[in-house]
Amino acid sequence: MSENALHGGIDAGGTTFKCGLADASGALVATHRVPVTTPEETLAAAAGWFTEQTGPGSLKTFGIASFGPIDVDPHSVSYGTITGSAKPGWSGTNLRAHFADALGLPVTLDTDVNGALFAEMSQGAAQGCASAAYVTVGTGIGAGLSANGGFLGRPSHPEFGHIALRRHTGDGDFKSVCRFHDDCLEGLASVRAIRARAGAPEDLPAAHPVWDIAADYLAQAARALTLTFRPERIILGGGLMLAPHLISRIRQSFDQQMGGYLEHAPSSELITTPGLGDNAGLIGAILLGQQGAQ
Amino acid sequence: MSENALHGGIDAGGTTFKCGLADASGALVATHRVPVTTPEETLAAAAGWFTEQTGPGSLKTFGIASFGPIDVDPHSVSYGTITGSAKPGWSGTNLRAHFADALGLPVTLDTDVNGALFAEMSQGAAQGCASAAYVTVGTGIGAGLSANGGFLGRPSHPEFGHIALRRHTGDGDFKSVCRFHDDCLEGLASVRAIRARAGAPEDLPAAHPVWDIAADYLAQAARALTLTFRPERIILGGGLMLAPHLISRIRQSFDQQMGGYLEHAPSSELITTPGLGDNAGLIGAILLGQQGAQ
Image 1 (tube, each protein chain N blue to C red):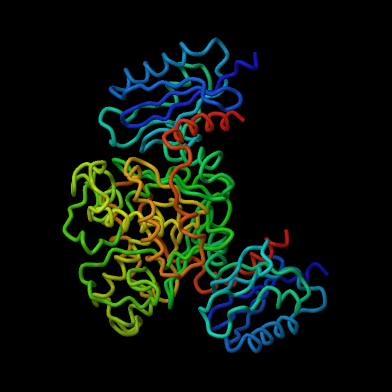
Image 2: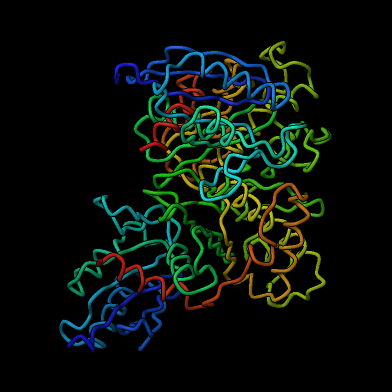
C-alpha cells in the first residue's frame, strides 16, 4: 500500500483554508479551498474533504501552516490554539487538536510564514541557504525566520510586522493603520496601509508616489533582518508584492540605506520574491507534517 | 600536572587588550591590561605576558573576543582577521593566527559581544536562557545574539548598530554621528552621539532631556530584537549603561512602544544590565577557548 501513501496539509489563512494532498514523491495530487466562516463550519468542511479523499490508513502525515497569533510550542498544553483576538470568533480554537481527532493521526502545526519559509528553503527561492527569512506583505505583515537549523522566535514566533520604522519624508502625516503602534511596519506598509493612502494597490500605476514609500519601508525591514541575523535570503511575498515593479525598488532603497557599510550579497540575490508562488504555504504545511512525523 | 592547567583569553577591545588566565575551576588567577597601539607592539606585549605567566604545556586552551569587523568563520582562510577599516592600521591583522603561532595551540575567536553574551549565558544575567542578546552601547553599538544553540549572523556576525530608527520627536535636527547612515542606532544613541548632543554622558544630570531620547532609541532596539527573534533576555552593557537611571527608562519606553501588543516577560526581567560587569568579555573569551577545544 506504500504507493498509495498520502501526505496532507492545510495552509490556514484568514479568509481561505487551502487543503492539499501530496503523494510519496511530494507532488500535489489534490487540492481544495474552504472559505473561512465560523471555526465549526470551516474545520468540519476541511476535515470532511480529507476524509473523502483518503482511504483508511492512506493518510500518513498531516501538517498545518496557520494564521496567528497561534501557540506553536509542541511542549505547550495549548499547542495549535489560536490566541489573541486577531480574527473574531477564532480565539481559543485548537486547529491541531481538531484535525488530529478528526483524522486520527498526529498533526504538526506552525505559522503560515514558517510554513512558506520551510517550503522555500526546501524547494524554492531559498534552497540551499543555511538561513533565510520569509516576509508576507498582505493585509498584515508577518515573518518566518530560520537560522542555526531551526525557526527563530521559539518557543513562540516573531512579530516582525511591529518593528518601529523611520518615516519616509513624504509620509510624515499618514496615520498608521495599526491599532497598537503609530510607527510600525504593518501600520505603514501593509496592503491595508497602502489602501488607506491611495486605494487598491492593484489599481495603482507604477508612477504613484506611494510605491516609493512602500519600497523605503520594506527596505528598512530587509535592513533590520540583515543587520540582526544576516539571512542568506530574504523572500518577500504576499499581495503587495504582486506589483511587478516593487521588488527592484525595494532592492534599490536597500542598497541606498545600507550606504555601502556592509559587504553582502548583491541585493538582487539577497532580496527576492517567492519561488513557489501561491503554493508555498500549502507545500510547507505538508512538509511540516512529514518532518514532524520523523 | 592537571592541577596546573590554565585557560587563557583576551578581551580585545579597541583601546585595551584585557588578558586573563583561569584555572581548571574557571576562576581568574591572573589578569593583565595591554594598551592598544600598533598591531606589532600590542600583540607582542600580550603574547609575551602569557608566555611569562605559563609554564611549558600548562596553557591548555585559548580564546579571543575581539572588536571588529572581524572574520569569525572557522572555515574561512582568513579566520581571525580584522576586516574593514574600523581601526586605523589594524585591517588585515590576523589575531587568531598570531596567538596560535606565539603560544603554540589552537585559538578560538569570536566578536567581543559574542564573547560577553556567551559568558552572560553561561554564568551571568542570561544563565538558563535558550536565547539572548547582548548589546554594547559604547563608542559604537554592537550586538551578539544567540538562538537555536548558536550565535546568529553566521558565518559572519550581526551589525545591529546600523538598523534604522524612528526619530524621537525632540531629536529631529540632530545630525547622526555615523558616517554611513543618518538614521541608525549607533549614529543616534551611541556614547559618541550623546556626547555630540550634550557632552560627556558621565557628567549629565539624570534630568537632562537627552536621556529620554537615548532611552527611546535603545527601547526601539530592544523592540526590534524582541519582534524578530524573541530573546529570553536582552542585556544592555557598555559605557552609556553605567548611568544607573537609564535601564528603567528604557524598560518604560519599551512597554510604552509595545503598546500591550504582545505577551512577553515583564520588561524588568527581559531587559537588564550585565551580570558579570566589566569581566564579561574576558570570561567569555576564556570560555570560547575552552568550548573550541572540545
